[in-house]
Length: 353
Image 1 (cartoon, one colour):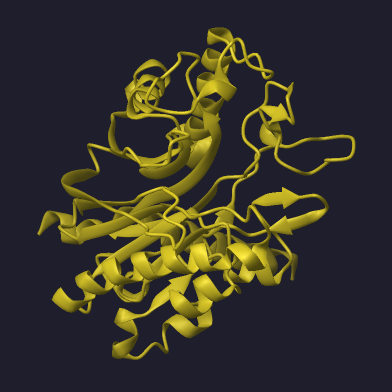
Image 2 (cartoon, rainbow, N blue to C red):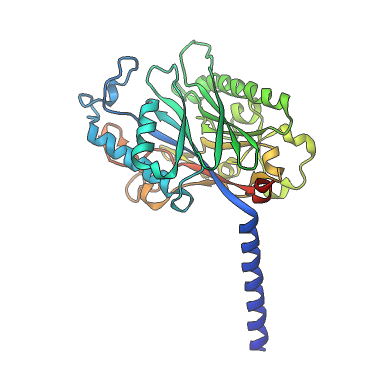
């Protein structure tokens, strides 16, 4: 009897290993991520921007040494993703300028062969959005940047749109967002995030008008959660589960699906405000990326990325991200947000074709 069970287990494990090997041969797994950098600023005064908070003479005493450590720390997190190979695409917000992002890539990530795509925003604080991608996995096609017009005319971050071509010849339309904050209160400022949602939706709809099967990835710090009006109603980003994917009708191609929705419902978040978790860092995709045979989402792969070294392990903020600053007190950590990521499968057969 024992020998029979042993034989069955051996057969099962062999079949499992064979299935994994066949899957590995058929697919290439690509990682897409987003990470709020919590003010990745250099220590040099920029007369074009209000960066006085991040200078050696400021209360935070932001020095070149601290800037160098910050770049190293953020690059360490990026590199640690994807089993130390780094993400294939990662979007950022709260970066001072393109030079800062290029400096981090050149100094700490040069072996990963990233190319930078960047948008200098009209926000006078120099808080911009950007993106890097692996040049051996994608070809850069074009870039756009959409202005979000607020009712009070206050300048806010652009929405960066980078268009990339995968090895399977699928065009990806990627949008990197950092929507207006909740300064003044969530309810009073909601109109600003609704304005950003409308701007993003209009840009996405332009791609859908050209092709119902457009491959859209919208990522960012939305400063609203998956259940808020700007995301759920204005943008119309719907919840999705693996069980529902196989049942999706063809007209669902033009819908948007929020991969972060279930995390919010489970009480998880990427940012901790006081004692509450907020799921404000999200990845939203179009329906075609759920069913596209050559390039599609790996179901249930959305993750709030929190390796132990970027987590606060004691005290009042235990479990929260380990940030660079606590108020004006320098902590030497990483960011006050956790990154979010999702995996996609690229069919190797489509590459050969």
